Amino acid sequence: MNELLPDGGTIRKLWLGEADAYRDHLLRLDRESRYRRFSGAVSDEVIARHAATAGEIGVVVHGFFVDGVLRGAAELRQEGSLFSPQAEAAFSIEKPWQSHGVGTELLERTLLTARNRGIKSLRMNCLAENKRMQQLARKFDAEFSFDFGSVVGAVDPPRSTLLSLMREAIADSYGIASAIFEAQSRLLRPA
Ligand SMILES: CC(C)(COP(=O)(O)OP(=O)(O)OC[C@H]1O[C@@H](n2cnc3c(N)ncnc32)[C@H](O)[C@@H]1OP(=O)(O)O)[C@@H](O)C(=O)NCCC(=O)NCCS
Image (cartoon, rainbow, N blue to C red; front, side, top):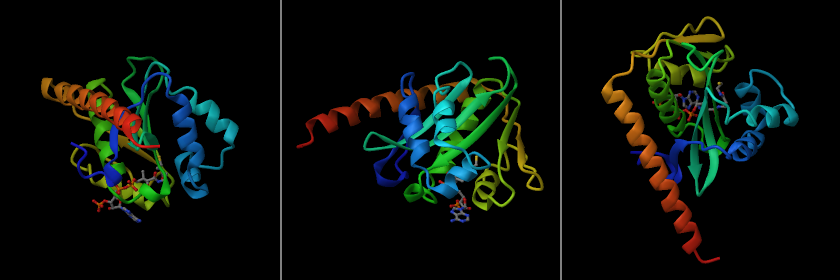
């Protein structure tokens, strides 16, 4: 798992208390990526307020980490109540790690999580000119439909099964193990 990610990076869910790492990652996005991520120009303050909500109930953020630093993220946000069948997804990858398959891996994880939470409709606010995001979504054509004529894509993740629940649990335990391993490696690394 994750062996194809660049720079030996790993993907795992963000934990409670990692909102600052999420904020710092979003603030590091170059101008164009920030614009695309938020479908418009947003200030640092708006980003900080947004990132602070990452630990809220109904929000799951998968992070792409390189050497313990968050370099990419996929945010899944249920709309309305915790049991709402609708959610919104948004992706952000820092420029040097774009076009290396990170978005593909993050979308796959997000779809699995959405499926296991009973989400029936997943919206992705995507600017019409954002061809890369549209290409990425197309790779999952079999799992959902995406209306490329509009700025909003509708996704219908299939229902959860025992296997899909197990796949998410295995990915989570792998994420914890790799985070512990990475923290230990950093401690042992010569200063
Ligand atoms: C859009 C984004 C999430 C895509 O993630 P990524 O890691 O760059 O994408 P991937 O490497 O997984 O590539 C996905 C597909 O996009 C296409 N693609 C990749 N690089 C591309 C490029 N430079 N130009 C056009 N299409 C490209 C390819 O079809 C690719 O699939 P393939 O390699 O199997 O052919 C990422 O680039 C990003 O964060 N951009 C800035 C913020 C943003 O646009 N967010 C989306 C709005 S929510």
